Amino acid sequence: MKLYNFFRSSAAFRVRIALNLKGLDYERISKAFAKNEHRAADYLALNPQGLIPALEIDGAVISQSLAIIEYLNDLNPQPALLPADPLSRAQVRSMALAIACDIHPLNNLRVLNYLRKDLAQNDDGVNTWYRHWVTEGFRGLEQQVAKHSSARRYCFGDTVSLADVCLVPQMYNARRFETDLTPFPTLVAISTHLESLPAFDSARPEAQPDAK
Ligand SMILES: N[C@@H](CCC(=O)N[C@@H](CS)C(=O)NCC(=O)O)C(=O)O
Image (tube, rainbow, N blue to C red; front, side, top):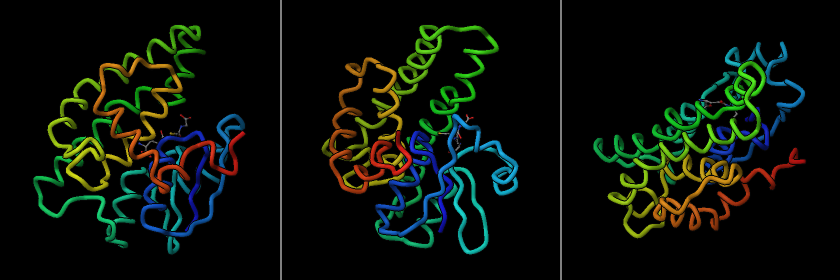
């Protein structure tokens, strides 16, 4: 398996966590954003969406981190990243998608670059935008997770799930942009616990070979 990866990519961070949880070996192929390597013709030929990550596996290429993780989960069922019963599955996906569809895309690099370059926003404007959308998304998620977490160790129940895999990278980015996290004690407690687990710790950006 080859993971088209960049240490800074939080969507790739999700996939790295899932690969670690499943104990799977993979080759990392770094695509540096600063050099626009994710927009180069060779990568676009593999992933026309031009975003990181993509996984090459058995001659196929899969883009979109959640599609990759669900595929890995189908092939390697343990530990299960989605619960068995349909309602619980939907609730875990609801949390994961609140991050992956409602927070992350608004704060992606290309969005921040557009704000900065095309709409002439300075750092202050860009950072305010970033924090606004994390805060907005975390507000609902905090309540959702508080309802479903058993002991503030995992987002749903008392086992690791797709929601946890999405939470930690988003929390990492929220901290990087100095978002005030005091309104989100449940999310902070869960993320702190998860970050102590080896599968999460070794997936963090600073632990990647291409981190500068
Ligand atoms: N929904 C996609 C998002 C992928 C994505 O936006 N990746 C970011 C890095 S986290 C990226 O490639 N950004 C490059 C850019 O914005 O130019 C997924 O979950 O894989």
